[in-house]
Every structure is written in structure tokens, then in C-alpha cells.
Image 1 (cartoon, rainbow, N blue to C red):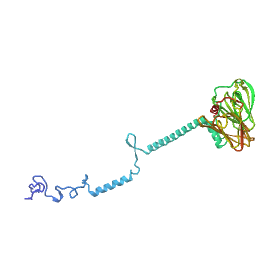
Image 2: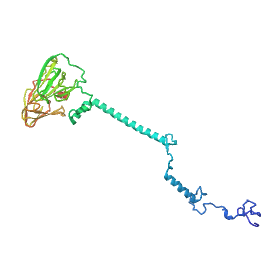
Image 3: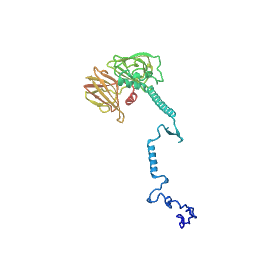
Image 4: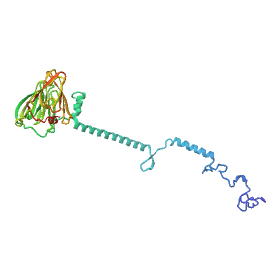
Amino acid sequence: MFGRKCTLCGGKLDSRGICEECGLDSSKSEKRYKINQSSCDGEPLTHVHRADYHVPEQKEQKQKKEQNTRDRQGPEKGQPEYRYHDDTAQRRMSKREWEKDRKKSVAGRVVAVITIVLTVAGIVVSVIEDHGPEISSWVDTEFGEGEGAAVSEEYQYDPYEYVETSIPKTGESAEYVLSTGHYIVGTHIPEGNYAAETQDTFDTVQVHDNVNGIYLFEYEDKEENCLDDLRMYQGAIVTVGCEDTVTLKTDNGQTGLMEQGIPNPLTETVAIGSGEEKTAGIDFEPGIYDIVASGEIGIVDITVYDEVGEKIKTFSVYLGEDSGNGKEYKYMVLPEKTTIACNDGVALSLTPAETIASEDYLGFYENLY
């Protein structure tokens, strides 16, 4: 060892080859020492230094491969799942707890469905209670008479439900034989409780009373009709439609309330030929006429306008010898601008009505419709 220097610090070595300065044992092979070297020697300057450089590269690649395999496979078979709660804490859920939670979820959905069904059912019941008659009438029209009864078995329409006044029970007994036309209660017939006798199943009696909220359209074949209970108050408009006549009978006619009416200011009869149209105020005087048809059975079209020319009512009437309305229509009100046209071979004579209730011709339609 004589004359050798320490390869680490250059110090003097003793007889055993140990440096007297730094204590390095130089008797071992220098190949086992790497002075001022690192695992990064020989790598490019841009390489990333590995923190686990002490792990052999092949072993590290094997560990990464095993880790990637576990990540793709997910949790080991039989390993419980984890579930997050609102407090963000994570806990292990057992199979029993999972089943219990699932049953609660199903029960919640069932309760929600039942709640929705009950809510919808409540709405349907409310609609039937408020609009039972309209629904029943619509069903009868669409599917046949009597089917609408299934919509509301308990509800029965009362046309006098909102009437707050009553007609005195005592009065005079009387009968009135009426043909097709309009009649004013208090002018043509007295106030009272009436029963109607019709000659044909298609004969109709209508009562329109805005003051008392009574609106009737009655005929013999109508189920639960009011032909035996017609309550007619002062000022109501009664419309009869029949081939011959309808008889109205009362035992408490309030004749003391009858008004004399006023004489009709009209004096001239107006003729309208088949296929011809005339206008009130231009071709003849506006007013109230009794219409008498001649010639073949046909349709009479009538259109009523207000003061500014806006259409307020259009209706058609069959008139003629064998018509369901007969040959005559009493008390037809024709305000100014009203047009009346004859079709299908029918011709008309407009004869001024004898007694009228008012010269407010437009007001008649305001009360009627």
C-alpha cells in the first residue's frame, strides 16, 4: 500500500489500505464505488428525474402494469360498494342496507303515483259537479240519447235553481192556444205556472228569462222535460214551434199584472217573393210583423244587425203548408238593417202585428239571446 494515495481525498493510506484522512477502505475493488456519479448520468438534459430511481426500471414497469390492470377490473369480486351521502362522508353499504334503501325508493314512487291519481280524480269530480249538464248534453249528442247519464248519476239539472222569487199560488185559470212565434209574458199571456199540451213530439216550447235566469227548451221526447212545470215570469219571452198549435194552461195566472201593450205603428203589408231578399229600413219599415208563408215549403233566412252594422243574430225558419213550424210565424221582430230572404220557392207576406210590447226592436234581441 506504500505510496498509494486515497482515491477520494488524496490522503495517505496505512498498511491496510485505509485512508488516514477520510477513512476510505481502499483495499476493496474500486468498481464497487461510483464517485460523483448518479443514475441520471448518460440521460438527456430534458429527461424527467424519477423519485423512485432506486427501483429497477423493469420492476417499476411491472408494478405500473399490475396497477393498470386492477384499475380496469374495478373492485374485486365480492367487495362492497361505496356510497356518498349529503355530508360527503363515505361509508360501506351492506347488502341488507342496500335492499332496505331500494324498498324505500320504490315506496316513495308508489306514494307519488297515488298522490297524482287522487289529485286528477279530484279535478274530474269538481268539473263534473260544475258542468255536469253540459257534459251530459255533449255525450248525448255525440254518442246517443241517454249515454250522458253515466257522466253524473247523482247530479240532476234544476232550471229553477237560481230563481229567488216565486209566483203567487193563487190566480185565474186560463188556456192559451198558440201557434209558432214569440209571445211576451205580461203582454200576450199572464205570469203564472203553466203546463203545455203539444200535438206532436217535435213541438217545442222555449222560455228565455234573463232577469230570473230561466232558459228552457222543452219538447215531449226530451228526457225529464219541464212541459208540466213551466214557470213564466213577467217580461219573459216564450217561443213556440209547432205545425199546428200548442196549448198552455195555468191555474194561477196573474192577470192583474197584464199590460195593455201599445198599438203597432206599422200599417202596411210587405210582400217578399221567392228568391227575393229585402232589407228593413230600405225596402220596408222596421218593426214587428206576423209572417205568413205561401207557395211551396221553404227556408226563410233572417239576419239581424245592430246600429253600427255588426251582425248580432242569424237564423233560418222552415215555413209552409206541411212544415214543422206551419205557415205562420207570430211576432217576428225586424230591426233596421235586418235582411230577410225567401228560398226554395216560398213567398212571404209581412203583416204588422196587432199589439206590441215595445218599439225597442234591438232591445228584444238583447233580451232574447
